[in-house]
Amino acid sequence: MVLLSGPRQVGKTTLVRQLADPARRYLTLDDDLTRLAAREDPVGFVRGIDHAIIDEVQRAPDLLLAIKRTVDEDRRPGRFLLTGSANLMALPRVADSLAGRMETLVLLPLAQSEMAVAPGAAVSWLDTLFAGEPLFAAEPVVGEALIESVGKGGYPEAASRADPRRRKAWARQYIDALIQRDVKDIASIDKLDQLPRLLRALAQTAGQLCNYSQLGGQIGVDHKTANKYLAVFEQMYLLQRLPAWSGNRLNRLLKTPKLQFFDAGLLGVLVDFSDPLRQRALFGHILESFVFGELQKLATWAEDAYSMFYFRDKDQAEVDFVVENTAGDIIGIEVKAAASVTSGDLRGLKKLAGLAAPAFRAGIVLYDGVETLPLGQANGRPLWAMPVSTLFSGRVV
Image 1: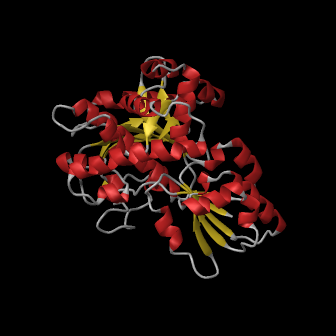
Image 2: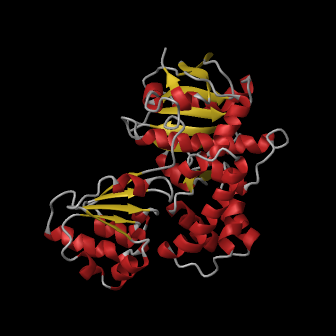
Image 3: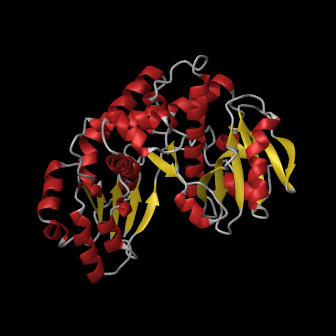
């Protein structure tokens, strides 16, 4: 079977309904009666179904065990196409029961290249950089236009609204609906009123190290409870803990992760971003999460498989993102909201190049500019300044 997983309102249902036909039933657990049947008698619910699309399957987790049983009895591929607005494989009981039986595909909010005038025209951004080629902005997006693009985010419903006030209203209602309806489907939370406060506290720390005790203290819970709630937000694809990169893989597990949000539009609403001139530093943090989200989306259709980290050494030299391919090679990506790049912006990349040699392939500074320009080398590898908008519509010269 196949699970199409991802946050609510990104288009999972729209996509799978196109595959429904008389031979493949469409069932959604957002329907009260269907959900009741799936919860009360999951074995009976599945009995007699030969091929089916089951939407929002996380609303009846026990149904997955019944599906497993029927799949074990009849191993024909493609019998069940499931969608879920939570990462079901993060639930130990589900992950153990479905190992080797299910392939998971993740559908994230729309990438900027998908919303461009000529979608599909963008080159494979990550694959190209790892091949040693710099990218140039086919259609530069800078200044106010960049701020507008970042603020829209990638949720189709929000991005389609031209009025920023209507986008913010949608985002607030979206967050409220997730907390009030979806959280209880995947976790046992005693006090739902603590979750909105924690989510806003997490938004204020986007791009920073996780301190569970400090976060818990802001809403009156201990660090274990804060960690549990944070994991729920991760399962719902709102945010992700980004591990530290280290040449020693054990150290990666021991070091404190950073928090990044998948959608910059939601993040902007959570931190009350409204005035780019007065909140320039805040926009820098939002832009960093925006780049994180775009890289995650671009990685889903790249030829190679990529893992993402951040880098910080004992002298506080930092690189926002370290992308590693399956061969263990890396590129460093630094994000700047400014329209210019200084030598100081290269400090972390040069440190990383020295520590990671010979795995270091290139260092990139993404900035609010138009031109792609060489910035010299670090340990014999190229450093480049590249526009953020190469993520939108990059091209190779």
